[in-house]
Length: 263
Ligand code: AMP
Image (cartoon, rainbow, N blue to C red):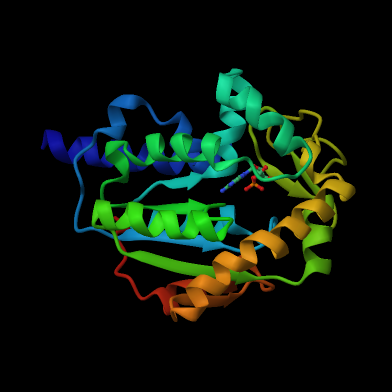
């Protein structure tokens, strides 16, 4: 009875927080330490790796997968932004790379990620958003997952560059509740103001057009090598990311073919 109510309240917490902050990846950072130790609810899911260019919808799909399979989303971008916000030594070093759209070196990235993946809530599996981004990270991840006994499921969200440019340059975020809008595809009701709390919406510094172009270049130069690595081994699940979020989610679930853990 006690275990049941704990299970329910944890699930309710996950759902409500994801709505409240508009991103489960943020939720994984905000989740109280006590809940991270919650017992595994059922069999392992494995590591669902979401690849795709910046702005392809990885965080939206990650959130849906998280709810369906009851595992956390780990966004390396959010982990890094959290360190920057808290002004940690790693965050201060990472900030200069992030501001210009460059990849943060593995000497900073790896310890931050490994620490997060060692938390008990990752034991059954997790969704990775934004990692790996290089061949070295892909190879390192294989070793790490083998050590944890988790099966990788590699998903690539394919989206053309022109679309990515509009998705990112049009993105606006509420600094208070983190709700995300797009001036072209999903505008707020009152221009420049959050629908939920009326705060003035902001543009992420790395969503400026010049920085976006740099991020796309980095994606094609660095991350393509990781994609080729999985593709050569026939491990890549290709998804057409240029559809509505519902259509993308349906295609992912049908190709992923994992049982749902939704209550
Ligand atoms: P994102 O929110 O995923 O677009 O990430 C924002 C920024 O964080 C990127 O432009 C990089 O500077 C940094 N970053 C995120 N993930 C990684 C990663 N796996 N390796 C290196 N840098 C990363």
